[in-house]
Every structure is written in structure tokens, then in C-alpha cells.
Image 1 (cartoon, one colour):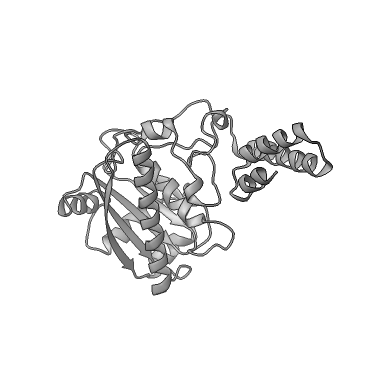
Image 2 (tube, rainbow, N blue to C red; image 1 turned 30 degrees about the vertical axis):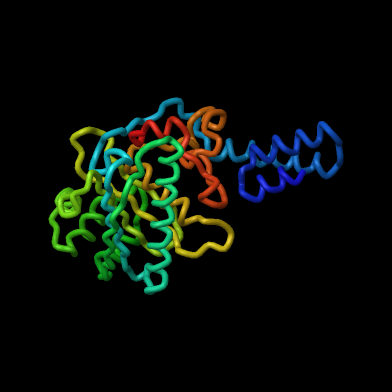
Length: 273
């Protein structure tokens, strides 16, 4: 029972269900049955909500500026100000601490695969807002022309294209990979637009997540998950039966704490491991 409670606390619900069922087989009780029933119902609803029964996986291995999670990666992190997204110095410090925590988690996952540790150098910019950026913000989503928003933000740093910006950062840091994060201090669905073909030179992710969440490490999960998209990983939460082979893979399921998430074999292959 205690094991099941621990798994449930960390949002590893499939392991919690298995532990409760094992306990119930040894000694049945109304409390255990209630735990089992509620978890089965929750997992069934989760599948109904998230799974679109997709039967294919889009492999983006070795595409774009962030080709594979090996070697040295320059991470360009832009704090974007608009009339709906303001950044205090403390918020920015906490966000960068989260980014560094995610990078440490990437490194640990690589060590688990007995790979050389990837290294990271972070270049951080604070982009002041203007009326044009605020107008972009009002319609920002994966379906909106987010390329225009990203290019406009980069133009405020003196670059004509995203490609030029990423190539310059990569060259100046003598890095193998370049990642671009645009972080707005708002609550919405974050998304990545990774390269899906070999000659692509522009990719980025919009992080639409406040720094603080009292319930779980939402920003840690978001940065780690969206970052892996740039390295070539596809989502697993909407693929048929992915729960049977990637239960705790970060591209499939969000655990309460990032330390309890994993990079399983399919995601590992996609990011160059």
C-alpha cells in the first residue's frame, strides 16, 4: 500500500495501480478497491482525452540546428516582454535555474545510456516589448503564424532571419547544436516547431508557462519535453499503445517531479542516442 501511495504521489499512476492490485491480491479491503477503481477510471479518461489513436511516429533525427543531444549545445533563451508577459529579475533567475536543472537531467539520462555527457552553454536575452509584439502575443498558438513572431523577436537583436541568428550563436560558441527558446510569462499550451526535413535551418520552441507552480514541476517538464522535440523526438502521448512501451517517457507522460521522468529507447534513438 505504501509503495502504491508513493507512486501515486509522484504521478506514476500505472505503477501505483500495479502496486495496489498486488496489495489487494494479498489482502482485500474497501480502501484498496477504491484506489484501484479510481486509478483505472483516471487512466481510462487520460487515454480518451490524450490519445488520438495515431499509428505513426515522426522521426526527426539529425534534422535542423539541434541535430542530436550529444557534444556541445548552445542554448539561446529569450525572455519576451509583451503587455501580457512581464519578467522580474527573480522570475528570470528562477527560469534559468530550471533550464540548468533540465540540462543536468539530460546529462543524467545520457549517463544511464553510458554515453558521453552532453555539455551546454546558455546565452540569455531579455527582449523588451512593443505594440507589435503585443499584437503577436494575442493570437499566439501552434496554429497561428508563430514564425512571424519568432522572426520579429530575433530582429530586435539585429538579425534578419532565425537561421542567421542560430548559425551565429553556434559559430561563436563552436557548438555542435543550437537551440532557441522563446519564453513568455503566461499560462497557455507550449509548443515546439522542430525541423522535419534535412535542409531545414530554423526551429524553435515557445515556452508559455509561468515560473511558479505549487503543485508540480510544470516548467521543468515543459522545458525538457519541448527541448527534446528540437533534438528530434516526437510526442508519444497520442500514439496508439505507447503506454505499453513508454510508460514514463517524458514524451508520453508528465510526472510530478522531473527526476521521475525517463527517456526510453524510442525517444533516445530519435535524439541521436
